[in-house]
Image (cartoon, rainbow, N blue to C red; front, side, top):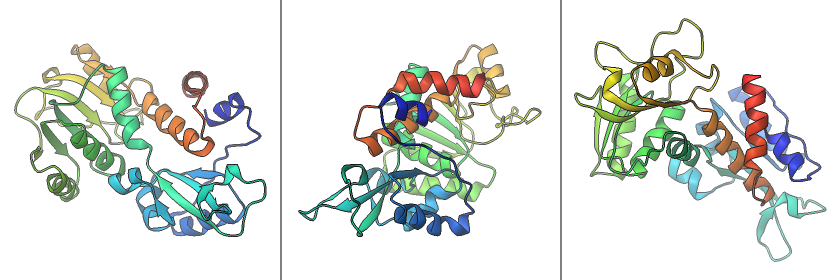
Length: 275
């Protein structure tokens, strides 16, 4: 996806994947900075850890408390920090600035794939880990009126609920399942990735027919068991492919300063994921 976008923009760049142990994350970021990388993407479990490892945080990373995109920068002759892409010779003094492109990608995907405006809606979120926490905060920021949090470890859900109520005191946040119909069920757990996985919710506590729309962050397989039963129950459904696309496209925009070729990236992504 990223290399297709890079090629479409005519850039002599290459996007590569590296497996980095969490204990080595700081060294990896510093190494990429020393080697004058343009930037990095970070995935689980590095996003929250990186907040304390970059030199500066964009407003998005400060707001959501997680970093999934890093842009390396240097000072110009006027003492202004600029992206490394703008320098032919990279100065010695550089910095890593952290961004978060996940949060906006979640709500853009929900809005476009499910035709759902979240303002004034009721939502049930499954999972309060890294992705779930960001989703919960973003749903709150978008103006949902009721938010139900379900997580295997209740203390983690309670911590997210407390954070939300501190920032959005008018929002009704509850731990557990709703007793009435909800507009959106969002799955931020990993249940559904493997064949034979149980559903990410307890069927005795929620009827899927009481949900208007279901968004599953999982994109491979294209249709999880959750999405299958939701579709059969008449719910609008979407998987996490668009979220993956939009967070990546925004990262490419941050690195290049150009409008990302989203449709080119989508075609290559769909081919790569689904064959």
